[in-house]
Image (tube, rainbow, N blue to C red):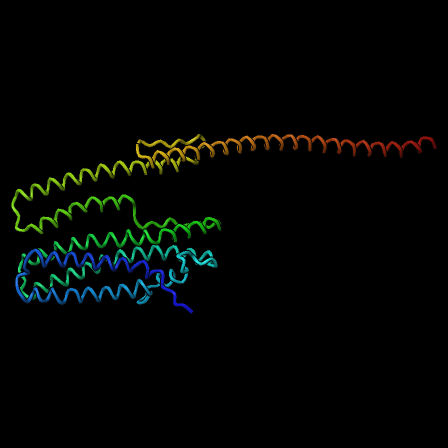
Length: 341
């Protein structure tokens, strides 16, 4: 019997690896740029910080990889997902719903733990350096480098986990729809928030450059700020351009329920959105024709029903008259023998 690798372990191993890479980046940046103020503070940072980071990584590995330490959502996911990274076919509707909720909870908890663990490492390092006689310049250097590494680590943990569980979330929703079950609108993040992180990446890149060239003069600061402002402006324009196209898609989907034919129109000149618009308009045309045929069939059916009701009423009335005539005829036949007698 072969051992089955937990599905969640395959998700968090790259996250842990990326965390070590971000930590190594911050660690190397601190050691390369300057001194921490004292030999004792440097020795503490060199030995204690990697050890504390390793302890957190082991806890992360056990909890989100194997479901230890009250990680109920991890156990549900690993039970419901097969080795082929698909849901087990014999799951009930309630189990599928629990799996969907657990997938969302798993991504959220990985993100929150990444953020909390990064802050703990940063607080542990700065507190230890301050107690070991580190100078203000060393503390500032640790804070800036640590926040930079934390910023690169936390968004990745959220985006990567969402990226990996995407097929499972899609399959869960499809199965529930096919079984005519209502699917709860579980939302973890938005496209807008992901673009927000893109705006901040240039800021931290410039921050790293400024730390590496320390001490810096005012010309370098001005040049860095100008470059940062240019990057933010370009990012903002790109965000508005793409997000407006997504907004038009949302408007189009909401208009499909109306009686008139919906038209998808977007100002984008990109091939993907143009092709998407053509496909949406074809879909809208087909849906409009189906609705039109359905309404005509409905009117024809109502007309037929009215004719049947009219025919039914006439038939019933005719039958009633026939019954009445038979009754009168019977009475007449009874009266006829009495007169002859």
